Image 1 (cartoon, helix red, strand yellow):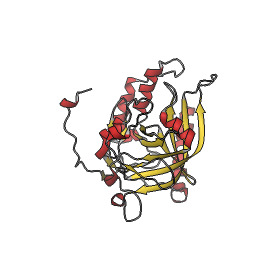
Image 2 (spheres, rainbow, N blue to C red):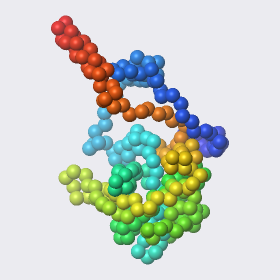
Image 3 (tube, rainbow, N blue to C red):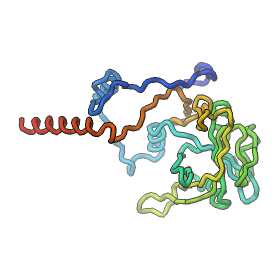
Image 4 (cartoon, one colour):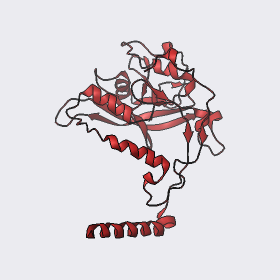
Length: 277
């Protein structure tokens, strides 16, 4: 990896824009390799595959591989408070939305060196706030991943601002344009098969209140990604920003069913002919 001195400066003006999809001429039944984009991608198959056995692979290598392949990952910037009243703030990229009814999100906290402060605080107090990280405070958010000793808070060192929540005790991050106040809904201790060792805590939160900054909202009441400018996690210590997006309407059988059936029949006929050769 290049040192930060060798890299170009961050371009805070880089635009997020919508483009055409990668293969706009694609039609039902088309193999991706029929297009120039798909054919170029298929060339990589010539180098073959590596198969990793997760039971025997070194756990550190497995971790590095998985976080480099499961990308980009959204980041939950989680605020909690301990029984002693110490506020905690930490980022988690094992995170996502689970449902809109009930409104729920999930975070996973690993237990590599014992339970994380975030997990302990949520289990004790049943409350937390998930904030979305934007480009403007990337370094501050990353600082909070520091291995802070007990009794110390990440908030002062981050330089971020504590803002009061409405329904829960933990503060939200004032700099975040999208924050969700959550109550603990479900807790799952994850154990490798055949062991009693808890390696991760799966935490499902019921979203009670959402704070959205007005300047990132569209006229229809949704968030404009070009204005939110969220961060995502990649492998190792890498982050990513949004580049381009494209829209693909979800197909319905009512509209395309007849055409798809024709494709199925054509493929079936071709398979039968091959079997006769």
